[in-house]
Length: 234
Ligand code: UDP
Image (tube, rainbow, N blue to C red; front, side, top):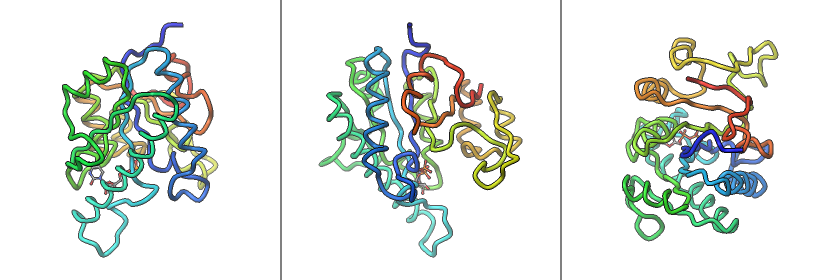
């Protein structure tokens, strides 16, 4: 079967890399994500990845540290995940390039849009670390921005939950599970699947978002093949 998408931007949340305690990197989760990326790469799909940092640090958690400083710390957290992903991809036999929006040239290349596109065309997986490089943003917004820049067909939002719900299904058993939503509904209902800045950027640039749980093996492949899993936002 021909994959539905030719070029995808995968957003992996920090939490999706963590184990049951929701902190740090679980080797099983990391290798699982890498194996799923290999599966779609082998189909000829061009892959770029933005990874979050919430399994280590989030800037918005009310600590006494100045918000901008806390956000820069969050961006460093994304880079740890990005390096782990790069390593896991290489162990799968994939060629993976790490680009960061904050220069750290000993461990990553500086972000360069045209080079990122060229790398994808050369079958390399491109990982974007340090978010946008600016505080007060999120890696969801980074995903929307990079997806627009590299002209991705879709954002594949790989989460620890399996779809978009009206409330946290772990806390509220009556939470509604959505199969399809518009960007406007996500914003108006404040569904929390992504922040409003990110959802607005996707709406303005007509970027579809496919949300699904990444802990289940084969889900990334299903999403790329256009199968009905999780939630589609379009
Ligand atoms: N962050 C930032 N600017 C960006 C992207 C991320 O300041 O462009 C910081 C912010 O503090 C955020 C943290 O990095 O809380 C980790 O990213 P995010 O919360 O998006 O990760 P996720 O929740 O997806 O794991």
